[in-house]
Length: 372
Image (cartoon, rainbow, N blue to C red; front, side, top):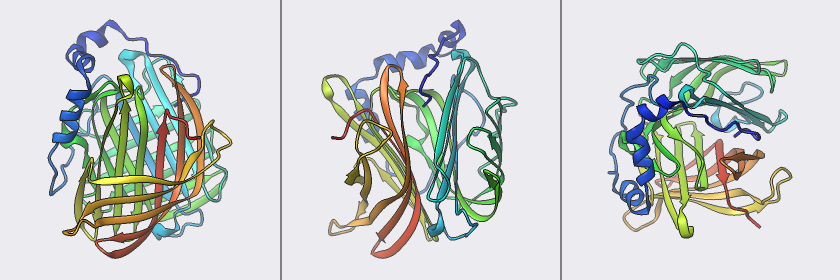
């Protein structure tokens, strides 16, 4: 989130168009949230996004490319992660760009900026097609889940640009959250999905160094509705890439009135061509080790144990040790609340159904709490 954020300034049309959604937000409470989170059915096969077009009061997207600085192709060689995140809402008179590079080799850097207007150009209702042309950055994405995506960007602040092709690593590597239903909490009223395993080809240039990518990895996220980080207690958005697939987990907890903590989240994996679904309660992202951080007033986690699913005797199907190889942290003020945000390059090693696996990936950790 930008450090000096411009607050939304809604047009009257925003209230007229979204009155029902705003009523749902107002009525959101502990009982309603728990019923929604805990009653979503476990899926045997993934849902595919019904529509990738642009609609709703707020358009939100996020694209990752995870690559090796020398152009190596194995997922275990990932040493750098670039992310471009944006929010666009003309009716709220606000848009946001948040971008970072976190790397074991290159200098890690990030920036964020709010704009008092809409930002996206040439949107469509059929395809995931969005364009950004700002002084600090330019971005172009076009495609569908079936055909893949073209992603071109120029980040002048960090000094990184690319022309890339995203092809699904597996047609099942997509997670449509809460079975495609509108998730409503005090923080959001949104439909969203993550396409969490792409094979990425093309060329990326980092501060004058050109790198050819033949088998990098990528993630594309898309959400529509209303989103804020109000009431977020913890937020862990974890993606791990392996030679035979990928694992994607989103954990988030809400701090409601009287310090009531409600846990939510969902996850999925595709390994050896097979899809597995995790509902909240089916997985754990347990913090194991911490370190001081020079950029935020809190310790940050640097090691985790990630478990998920159970076999017939109650032993975890997924059991991973996840450690930090690079990180970048910053604080951001959003809706008068101080956020502490850390993004990582990670290494993971462990087992899935007793078979050893090893890979690398990334995670975003967002929290309002302070770790002493």
